[in-house]
Amino acid sequence: MFTNCSLGHYHIIIAVVIWSICVDSRKIRGISLSYKRFYRERKSFLCIDGSKMIPFDQVNDDYCDCADGSDEPGTAACPNGRFYCTNLGYRPHYIPSSRVNDGICDCCDATDEYRSQKPCQNTCRNLGQRERAAVEGQMRALGEGLRLKQQLVEEAVLTWREKQAQLRDLQRVSDDLQTQLGDLRKEEARRKEEADALREREIGARETADDSPRSHYRTESPISIFNELDSNRDGSITVDEVQAKLSPVQGEERALSEDEAVALLGGAHQVDLSTFEETLWTSLRMGDSVTIKGRHGVPGSLADEDPNIKAAVSAAEKAAADLKKVEDSYEMVYMEIRDLREKLSIDYGSEREFLSLHNQCFQLKVHEYIYELCPFNQVTQKGSSGEEVSLGKWGSWAGSPENQYCQMRYESGEPCWQGPTRNTMVMLICGTETALRSVKEPSKCQYVMELQTPVSCQPALRQQGIHSEL
Ligand code: MAN
Image (cartoon, rainbow, N blue to C red; front, side):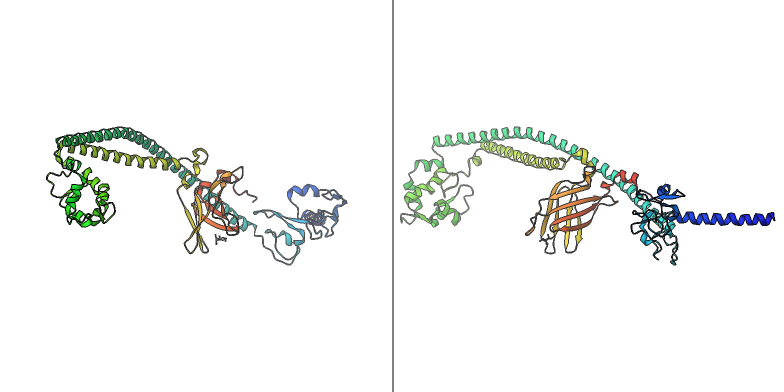
Protein backbone atom coordinates (compact mmCIF):
# COMPACT_ATOMS: atom_id res chain seq x y z
CA MET A 1 0.00 0.00 0.00
CA PHE A 2 2.66 2.30 1.18
CA THR A 3 4.51 1.19 -1.68
CA ASN A 4 1.50 1.45 -3.96
CA CYS A 5 0.33 4.59 -2.28
CA SER A 6 3.73 5.79 -2.28
CA LEU A 7 4.07 4.76 -5.88
CA GLY A 8 0.79 6.49 -6.72
CA HIS A 9 2.07 9.55 -4.95
CA TYR A 10 5.32 9.32 -6.91
CA HIS A 11 3.48 9.13 -10.17
CA ILE A 12 1.62 12.28 -9.34
CA ILE A 13 4.84 14.08 -8.34
CA ILE A 14 6.64 12.95 -11.53
CA ALA A 15 3.70 14.06 -13.68
CA VAL A 16 3.64 17.46 -11.98
CA VAL A 17 7.39 17.92 -12.41
CA ILE A 18 7.25 16.92 -16.10
CA TRP A 19 4.26 19.21 -16.63
CA SER A 20 5.91 22.08 -14.85
CA ILE A 21 9.13 21.59 -16.87
CA CYS A 22 7.06 21.52 -20.05
CA VAL A 23 5.08 24.55 -19.05
CA ASP A 24 8.14 26.41 -17.85
CA SER A 25 10.22 25.57 -20.90
CA ARG A 26 7.30 26.62 -23.12
CA LYS A 27 7.02 29.88 -21.23
CA ILE A 28 10.71 30.79 -21.23
CA ARG A 29 11.76 29.49 -24.65
CA GLY A 30 13.42 32.09 -26.87
CA ILE A 31 14.49 34.61 -24.24
CA SER A 32 17.90 35.61 -22.94
CA LEU A 33 18.94 35.44 -19.31
CA SER A 34 18.66 39.20 -18.94
CA TYR A 35 15.05 39.15 -20.12
CA LYS A 36 13.97 36.31 -17.80
CA ARG A 37 12.85 38.79 -15.15
CA PHE A 38 9.99 39.89 -17.43
CA TYR A 39 8.65 36.35 -17.66
CA ARG A 40 8.49 35.42 -13.95
CA GLU A 41 4.93 36.36 -13.29
CA ARG A 42 2.66 33.39 -12.84
CA LYS A 43 -0.72 35.09 -13.07
CA SER A 44 -0.26 37.75 -15.64
CA PHE A 45 2.31 39.04 -18.08
CA LEU A 46 2.95 42.71 -18.88
CA CYS A 47 4.02 43.20 -22.49
CA ILE A 48 7.59 44.54 -22.35
CA ASP A 49 6.59 47.80 -24.03
CA GLY A 50 4.07 48.15 -21.16
CA SER A 51 1.16 48.35 -23.58
CA LYS A 52 -0.90 45.42 -22.33
CA MET A 53 -1.38 42.95 -19.50
CA ILE A 54 -2.33 39.38 -20.41
CA PRO A 55 -2.76 36.14 -18.46
CA PHE A 56 0.61 34.45 -18.18
CA ASP A 57 -0.56 31.30 -19.95
CA GLN A 58 -0.96 33.36 -23.09
CA VAL A 59 2.82 33.68 -23.25
CA ASN A 60 4.22 31.51 -26.06
CA ASP A 61 0.74 30.13 -26.76
CA ASP A 62 1.29 30.68 -30.50
CA TYR A 63 -1.04 33.68 -30.54
CA CYS A 64 0.33 37.22 -30.73
CA ASP A 65 -1.12 39.46 -27.98
CA CYS A 66 1.55 42.15 -27.47
CA ALA A 67 2.23 44.79 -30.14
CA ASP A 68 5.98 44.44 -29.48
CA GLY A 69 5.79 40.67 -29.93
CA SER A 70 7.16 40.11 -26.42
CA ASP A 71 4.49 37.54 -25.44
CA GLU A 72 5.63 35.13 -28.18
CA PRO A 73 9.45 34.96 -27.96
CA GLY A 74 9.40 31.20 -28.58
CA THR A 75 6.88 30.93 -31.43
CA ALA A 76 6.49 32.39 -34.88
CA ALA A 77 3.17 34.03 -33.97
CA CYS A 78 4.30 37.68 -33.80
CA PRO A 79 5.68 39.21 -37.03
CA ASN A 80 8.05 41.45 -35.07
CA GLY A 81 9.04 38.85 -32.46
CA ARG A 82 12.58 37.69 -31.96
CA PHE A 83 13.90 34.39 -30.74
CA TYR A 84 17.00 34.16 -28.63
CA CYS A 85 19.46 31.38 -29.54
CA THR A 86 21.47 30.64 -26.38
CA ASN A 87 24.06 28.75 -28.44
CA LEU A 88 26.05 27.57 -25.45
CA GLY A 89 29.70 27.11 -26.48
CA TYR A 90 29.38 29.60 -29.32
CA ARG A 91 27.95 33.09 -29.56
CA PRO A 92 24.31 33.75 -28.64
CA HIS A 93 22.18 35.74 -31.02
CA TYR A 94 18.63 36.68 -31.93
CA ILE A 95 16.77 35.47 -35.00
CA PRO A 96 13.39 36.77 -36.24
CA SER A 97 10.80 34.55 -34.54
CA SER A 98 9.29 33.82 -37.97
CA ARG A 99 12.20 31.42 -38.39
CA VAL A 100 11.13 29.30 -35.41
CA ASN A 101 10.14 25.79 -36.51
CA ASP A 102 10.41 26.72 -40.20
CA GLY A 103 12.43 23.63 -41.05
CA ILE A 104 15.72 25.50 -41.29
CA CYS A 105 18.31 25.22 -38.53
CA ASP A 106 19.20 28.79 -37.55
CA CYS A 107 20.51 28.41 -34.00
CA CYS A 108 23.60 26.22 -33.72
CA ASP A 109 22.11 24.72 -30.55
CA ALA A 110 19.05 23.65 -32.65
CA THR A 111 16.61 25.30 -30.20
CA ASP A 112 14.72 27.17 -32.95
CA GLU A 113 13.50 23.89 -34.47
CA TYR A 114 12.00 22.33 -31.29
CA ARG A 115 8.78 21.27 -32.93
CA SER A 116 9.83 20.80 -36.56
CA GLN A 117 10.63 17.60 -38.40
CA LYS A 118 14.08 18.91 -39.22
CA PRO A 119 16.69 16.91 -37.32
CA CYS A 120 19.00 19.78 -36.31
CA GLN A 121 22.35 18.99 -34.69
CA ASN A 122 23.91 21.06 -31.96
CA THR A 123 27.03 22.37 -33.71
CA CYS A 124 27.84 25.14 -31.22
CA ARG A 125 30.78 23.31 -29.65
CA ASN A 126 32.51 22.82 -33.02
CA LEU A 127 31.80 26.36 -34.14
CA GLY A 128 33.09 27.69 -30.83
CA GLN A 129 36.26 25.62 -31.09
CA ARG A 130 36.87 26.82 -34.64
CA GLU A 131 36.30 30.43 -33.70
CA ARG A 132 38.50 30.19 -30.65
CA ALA A 133 41.27 28.71 -32.80
CA ALA A 134 40.86 31.55 -35.31
CA VAL A 135 40.95 34.15 -32.54
CA GLU A 136 44.01 32.51 -31.03
CA GLY A 137 45.66 32.58 -34.48
CA GLN A 138 44.88 36.25 -34.81
CA MET A 139 46.20 36.97 -31.34
CA ARG A 140 49.41 35.08 -32.13
CA ALA A 141 49.80 37.08 -35.36
CA LEU A 142 49.18 40.28 -33.45
CA GLY A 143 51.77 39.29 -30.82
CA GLU A 144 54.26 38.52 -33.59
CA GLY A 145 53.35 41.80 -35.32
CA LEU A 146 54.01 43.74 -32.13
CA ARG A 147 57.33 41.98 -31.64
CA LEU A 148 58.39 42.81 -35.21
CA LYS A 149 57.20 46.37 -34.80
CA GLN A 150 59.37 46.76 -31.72
CA GLN A 151 62.32 45.40 -33.69
CA LEU A 152 61.66 47.72 -36.65
CA VAL A 153 61.30 50.71 -34.39
CA GLU A 154 64.55 49.91 -32.61
CA GLU A 155 66.41 49.40 -35.89
CA ALA A 156 64.97 52.58 -37.36
CA VAL A 157 65.84 54.61 -34.29
CA LEU A 158 69.36 53.24 -34.44
CA THR A 159 69.65 54.16 -38.11
CA TRP A 160 68.23 57.58 -37.33
CA ARG A 161 70.77 58.13 -34.61
CA GLU A 162 73.56 56.92 -36.88
CA LYS A 163 72.44 59.37 -39.51
CA GLN A 164 72.43 62.13 -36.94
CA ALA A 165 75.96 61.26 -35.92
CA GLN A 166 76.89 61.15 -39.60
CA LEU A 167 75.36 64.59 -40.02
CA ARG A 168 77.36 65.95 -37.12
CA ASP A 169 80.57 64.45 -38.58
CA LEU A 170 79.81 65.89 -41.99
CA GLN A 171 79.12 69.25 -40.44
CA ARG A 172 82.54 69.15 -38.79
CA VAL A 173 84.18 68.14 -42.09
CA SER A 174 82.31 70.95 -43.82
CA ASP A 175 83.53 73.49 -41.24
CA ASP A 176 87.14 72.29 -41.69
CA LEU A 177 86.81 72.48 -45.45
CA GLN A 178 85.46 75.99 -45.21
CA THR A 179 88.47 77.06 -43.15
CA GLN A 180 90.79 75.33 -45.63
CA LEU A 181 88.97 77.01 -48.52
CA GLY A 182 89.59 80.42 -47.00
CA ASP A 183 93.31 79.70 -46.63
CA LEU A 184 93.60 78.11 -50.08
CA ARG A 185 91.81 80.99 -51.79
CA LYS A 186 94.26 83.42 -50.21
CA GLU A 187 97.20 81.18 -51.14
CA GLU A 188 96.02 80.82 -54.72
CA ALA A 189 95.54 84.58 -55.10
CA ARG A 190 98.96 85.25 -53.61
CA ARG A 191 100.71 82.71 -55.87
CA LYS A 192 98.93 84.06 -58.93
CA GLU A 193 99.85 87.60 -58.05
CA GLU A 194 103.46 86.53 -57.57
CA ALA A 195 103.63 84.80 -60.94
CA ASP A 196 101.93 87.71 -62.69
CA ALA A 197 104.25 90.21 -61.07
CA LEU A 198 107.34 88.23 -62.13
CA ARG A 199 106.00 87.93 -65.65
CA GLU A 200 105.25 91.64 -65.84
CA ARG A 201 108.66 92.51 -64.52
CA GLU A 202 110.33 90.26 -67.08
CA ILE A 203 108.28 91.68 -69.94
CA GLY A 204 109.16 95.19 -68.83
CA ALA A 205 112.85 94.31 -68.63
CA ARG A 206 112.82 92.76 -72.09
CA GLU A 207 111.00 95.65 -73.62
CA THR A 208 113.49 98.04 -72.09
CA ALA A 209 116.37 95.94 -73.39
CA ASP A 210 114.59 96.02 -76.72
CA ASP A 211 115.76 92.55 -77.61
CA SER A 212 112.53 90.74 -77.23
CA PRO A 213 110.82 89.40 -80.30
CA ARG A 214 107.67 91.01 -78.98
CA SER A 215 109.36 94.36 -79.15
CA HIS A 216 109.91 93.80 -82.86
CA TYR A 217 106.18 93.90 -83.31
CA ARG A 218 105.99 96.88 -80.99
CA THR A 219 108.66 98.84 -82.79
CA GLU A 220 108.12 97.66 -86.34
CA SER A 221 105.39 99.21 -88.44
CA PRO A 222 102.37 97.15 -89.48
CA ILE A 223 103.17 97.89 -93.14
CA SER A 224 106.59 96.29 -93.01
CA ILE A 225 105.15 93.13 -91.38
CA PHE A 226 102.21 93.16 -93.83
CA ASN A 227 104.66 93.30 -96.74
CA GLU A 228 106.76 90.57 -95.20
CA LEU A 229 103.74 88.27 -95.00
CA ASP A 230 102.30 89.23 -98.39
CA SER A 231 104.63 86.91 -100.33
CA ASN A 232 103.07 87.48 -103.76
CA ARG A 233 102.73 91.19 -103.15
CA ASP A 234 99.12 91.28 -104.25
CA GLY A 235 98.10 93.64 -101.44
CA SER A 236 96.36 91.06 -99.34
CA ILE A 237 97.33 88.33 -96.93
CA THR A 238 95.66 84.98 -97.54
CA VAL A 239 95.12 81.92 -95.40
CA ASP A 240 97.90 80.12 -97.33
CA GLU A 241 100.32 82.95 -96.66
CA VAL A 242 99.45 82.91 -92.96
CA GLN A 243 99.98 79.15 -92.82
CA ALA A 244 103.27 79.44 -94.71
CA LYS A 245 104.75 82.30 -92.68
CA LEU A 246 103.42 81.97 -89.17
CA SER A 247 103.67 79.39 -86.45
CA PRO A 248 102.20 79.06 -82.95
CA VAL A 249 104.26 80.59 -80.14
CA GLN A 250 104.05 77.30 -78.31
CA GLY A 251 105.07 74.46 -80.60
CA GLU A 252 106.79 76.28 -83.38
CA GLU A 253 107.20 73.13 -85.44
CA ARG A 254 103.47 72.74 -85.78
CA ALA A 255 101.76 74.24 -88.81
CA LEU A 256 98.72 76.37 -88.24
CA SER A 257 95.47 74.76 -89.31
CA GLU A 258 93.25 76.45 -91.87
CA ASP A 259 90.72 77.25 -89.14
CA GLU A 260 93.38 78.82 -86.96
CA ALA A 261 94.62 80.92 -89.91
CA VAL A 262 91.07 82.04 -90.71
CA ALA A 263 90.53 82.94 -87.06
CA LEU A 264 93.73 85.02 -87.05
CA LEU A 265 92.40 86.88 -90.08
CA GLY A 266 89.25 87.72 -88.13
CA GLY A 267 87.16 85.05 -89.85
CA ALA A 268 88.16 86.07 -93.42
CA HIS A 269 90.12 84.09 -96.00
CA GLN A 270 92.16 87.11 -97.03
CA VAL A 271 92.65 90.60 -95.58
CA ASP A 272 93.93 93.93 -96.79
CA LEU A 273 96.25 96.18 -94.77
CA SER A 274 93.55 97.91 -92.76
CA THR A 275 91.84 94.63 -91.76
CA PHE A 276 95.28 93.15 -91.07
CA GLU A 277 95.92 95.95 -88.56
CA GLU A 278 92.72 95.10 -86.71
CA THR A 279 93.22 91.36 -86.71
CA LEU A 280 96.52 89.51 -87.22
CA TRP A 281 98.65 92.52 -86.39
CA THR A 282 97.08 92.74 -82.91
CA SER A 283 97.82 89.04 -82.29
CA LEU A 284 101.44 89.48 -83.40
CA ARG A 285 101.89 92.48 -81.12
CA MET A 286 100.43 90.56 -78.17
CA GLY A 287 103.06 87.94 -78.92
CA ASP A 288 101.46 85.06 -77.03
CA SER A 289 99.68 83.13 -79.78
CA VAL A 290 101.57 83.35 -83.09
CA THR A 291 104.86 84.61 -84.37
CA ILE A 292 106.67 84.83 -87.71
CA LYS A 293 108.56 81.63 -88.41
CA GLY A 294 112.32 81.80 -88.06
CA ARG A 295 112.41 84.94 -85.98
CA HIS A 296 115.30 83.95 -83.74
CA GLY A 297 114.79 83.63 -80.06
CA VAL A 298 111.02 83.75 -80.11
CA PRO A 299 110.05 82.46 -76.69
CA GLY A 300 107.57 79.57 -76.27
CA SER A 301 106.51 81.41 -73.16
CA LEU A 302 108.21 83.51 -70.59
CA ALA A 303 108.06 80.62 -68.15
CA ASP A 304 110.02 78.45 -70.57
CA GLU A 305 112.89 80.89 -70.39
CA ASP A 306 112.96 82.01 -66.77
CA PRO A 307 113.17 79.36 -64.00
CA ASN A 308 111.84 81.82 -61.41
CA ILE A 309 108.77 82.53 -63.47
CA LYS A 310 108.43 78.83 -64.20
CA ALA A 311 108.50 78.03 -60.46
CA ALA A 312 106.04 80.81 -59.66
CA VAL A 313 103.66 79.73 -62.43
CA SER A 314 103.70 76.11 -61.35
CA ALA A 315 103.21 77.15 -57.68
CA ALA A 316 100.20 79.20 -58.77
CA GLU A 317 98.87 76.27 -60.80
CA LYS A 318 99.32 73.91 -57.87
CA ALA A 319 97.55 76.34 -55.53
CA ALA A 320 94.67 76.57 -58.03
CA ALA A 321 94.51 72.74 -58.31
CA ASP A 322 94.54 72.36 -54.50
CA LEU A 323 91.78 74.92 -54.22
CA LYS A 324 89.72 73.14 -56.88
CA LYS A 325 90.10 69.79 -55.09
CA VAL A 326 88.89 71.23 -51.80
CA GLU A 327 86.10 73.12 -53.55
CA ASP A 328 84.91 69.82 -55.09
CA SER A 329 85.04 68.03 -51.72
CA TYR A 330 83.13 70.87 -50.09
CA GLU A 331 80.47 70.67 -52.80
CA MET A 332 80.05 66.92 -52.20
CA VAL A 333 79.85 67.31 -48.44
CA TYR A 334 77.37 70.13 -48.84
CA MET A 335 75.11 67.92 -50.95
CA GLU A 336 75.38 65.00 -48.53
CA ILE A 337 74.45 67.30 -45.65
CA ARG A 338 71.46 68.61 -47.59
CA ASP A 339 70.20 65.05 -48.36
CA LEU A 340 70.69 63.91 -44.78
CA ARG A 341 68.92 66.95 -43.40
CA GLU A 342 65.98 66.19 -45.66
CA LYS A 343 65.82 62.59 -44.44
CA LEU A 344 66.02 63.68 -40.84
CA SER A 345 63.49 66.44 -41.16
CA ILE A 346 60.61 64.15 -40.17
CA ASP A 347 58.96 64.50 -36.81
CA TYR A 348 61.00 62.02 -34.81
CA GLY A 349 58.84 62.23 -31.72
CA SER A 350 55.40 61.23 -32.90
CA GLU A 351 56.21 59.26 -36.00
CA ARG A 352 59.26 57.28 -35.06
CA GLU A 353 57.35 54.01 -35.51
CA PHE A 354 57.15 54.84 -39.18
CA LEU A 355 60.83 55.55 -39.70
CA SER A 356 61.28 52.05 -41.13
CA LEU A 357 58.83 52.85 -43.93
CA HIS A 358 60.88 55.78 -45.17
CA ASN A 359 63.01 55.24 -48.28
CA GLN A 360 61.16 52.05 -49.20
CA CYS A 361 58.67 51.32 -52.00
CA PHE A 362 56.06 48.58 -52.32
CA GLN A 363 54.49 47.30 -55.50
CA LEU A 364 51.34 45.40 -56.41
CA LYS A 365 50.03 44.32 -59.81
CA VAL A 366 46.30 44.66 -60.20
CA HIS A 367 44.86 43.87 -63.63
CA GLU A 368 46.96 45.70 -66.23
CA TYR A 369 48.51 48.16 -63.75
CA ILE A 370 51.52 48.03 -61.47
CA TYR A 371 50.95 50.25 -58.46
CA GLU A 372 53.83 51.53 -56.40
CA LEU A 373 53.62 53.13 -53.00
CA CYS A 374 56.70 54.89 -51.62
CA PRO A 375 55.52 55.92 -48.13
CA PHE A 376 55.98 59.59 -47.27
CA ASN A 377 56.88 60.23 -50.89
CA GLN A 378 54.48 59.28 -53.68
CA VAL A 379 52.11 56.78 -55.27
CA THR A 380 52.32 55.83 -58.95
CA GLN A 381 50.50 53.65 -61.44
CA LYS A 382 52.27 52.08 -64.43
CA GLY A 383 50.22 50.78 -67.32
CA SER A 384 51.19 48.16 -69.90
CA SER A 385 52.69 50.91 -72.10
CA GLY A 386 55.16 51.60 -69.28
CA GLU A 387 53.95 55.14 -68.82
CA GLU A 388 53.97 56.22 -65.18
CA VAL A 389 51.08 58.22 -63.79
CA SER A 390 51.23 59.99 -60.43
CA LEU A 391 48.41 58.97 -58.09
CA GLY A 392 49.45 61.55 -55.51
CA LYS A 393 52.28 62.92 -53.47
CA TRP A 394 52.58 62.55 -49.72
CA GLY A 395 50.07 64.82 -48.09
CA SER A 396 49.22 64.06 -44.47
CA TRP A 397 48.00 61.57 -41.92
CA ALA A 398 44.28 61.15 -42.30
CA GLY A 399 43.05 58.71 -39.65
CA SER A 400 40.50 59.42 -36.94
CA PRO A 401 41.38 61.77 -34.07
CA GLU A 402 41.92 58.67 -31.86
CA ASN A 403 44.39 57.13 -34.29
CA GLN A 404 45.38 59.47 -37.06
CA TYR A 405 48.27 57.18 -38.03
CA CYS A 406 46.07 54.48 -39.54
CA GLN A 407 45.47 56.32 -42.82
CA MET A 408 47.71 58.28 -45.16
CA ARG A 409 46.59 60.77 -47.76
CA TYR A 410 48.53 61.26 -51.02
CA GLU A 411 47.21 64.16 -53.06
CA SER A 412 47.65 66.31 -56.16
CA GLY A 413 48.50 63.48 -58.55
CA GLU A 414 48.02 63.69 -62.30
CA PRO A 415 44.71 65.24 -63.33
CA CYS A 416 42.18 62.71 -64.54
CA TRP A 417 40.76 63.18 -68.01
CA GLN A 418 37.45 64.99 -67.53
CA GLY A 419 37.71 64.20 -63.87
CA PRO A 420 39.39 65.19 -60.60
CA THR A 421 43.06 65.19 -59.71
CA ARG A 422 44.24 61.70 -58.80
CA ASN A 423 44.41 61.09 -55.03
CA THR A 424 45.15 58.02 -52.95
CA MET A 425 44.14 57.02 -49.46
CA VAL A 426 46.36 54.37 -47.86
CA MET A 427 44.90 52.32 -45.03
CA LEU A 428 47.50 50.81 -42.71
CA ILE A 429 46.64 47.37 -41.38
CA CYS A 430 48.42 45.25 -38.81
CA GLY A 431 50.27 42.17 -40.07
CA THR A 432 53.55 40.33 -39.71
CA GLU A 433 54.85 41.46 -43.11
CA THR A 434 55.13 44.85 -44.74
CA ALA A 435 53.44 44.65 -48.15
CA LEU A 436 50.90 46.31 -50.35
CA ARG A 437 47.84 44.08 -50.01
CA SER A 438 45.18 45.67 -52.18
CA VAL A 439 44.47 48.56 -54.52
CA LYS A 440 41.00 49.70 -55.49
CA GLU A 441 39.60 52.60 -57.45
CA PRO A 442 36.15 53.03 -55.86
CA SER A 443 35.50 56.15 -57.88
CA LYS A 444 37.25 57.48 -60.95
CA CYS A 445 40.86 58.43 -60.21
CA GLN A 446 40.34 58.09 -56.44
CA TYR A 447 42.38 55.17 -55.19
CA VAL A 448 42.37 53.23 -51.93
CA MET A 449 45.27 51.01 -50.95
CA GLU A 450 45.88 48.67 -48.06
CA LEU A 451 49.41 48.59 -46.71
CA GLN A 452 49.98 45.79 -44.25
CA THR A 453 52.78 46.34 -41.79
CA PRO A 454 53.75 45.39 -38.23
CA VAL A 455 54.28 49.10 -37.68
CA SER A 456 50.54 49.65 -37.44
CA CYS A 457 49.89 46.88 -34.88
CA GLN A 458 48.46 48.40 -31.72
CA PRO A 459 48.75 46.81 -28.27
CA ALA A 460 45.19 48.03 -27.62
CA LEU A 461 43.91 45.48 -30.14
CA ARG A 462 45.59 42.74 -28.20
CA GLN A 463 44.00 43.62 -24.89
CA GLN A 464 40.63 44.01 -26.47
CA GLY A 465 41.12 40.83 -28.51
CA ILE A 466 38.12 39.69 -30.43
CA HIS A 467 35.78 40.02 -27.58
CA SER A 468 34.56 36.68 -26.58
CA GLU A 469 30.90 35.94 -26.26
CA LEU A 470 31.65 32.25 -26.04
C1 MAN B 1 43.89 55.59 -66.53
C2 MAN B 1 44.11 55.03 -65.15
C3 MAN B 1 42.80 54.65 -64.50
C4 MAN B 1 41.82 55.82 -64.57
C5 MAN B 1 41.69 56.31 -65.97
C6 MAN B 1 40.81 57.56 -66.02
O1 MAN B 1 43.46 54.60 -67.40
O2 MAN B 1 44.77 56.00 -64.41
O3 MAN B 1 43.01 54.27 -63.15
O4 MAN B 1 40.55 55.43 -64.09
O5 MAN B 1 42.97 56.65 -66.49
O6 MAN B 1 40.67 58.05 -67.29
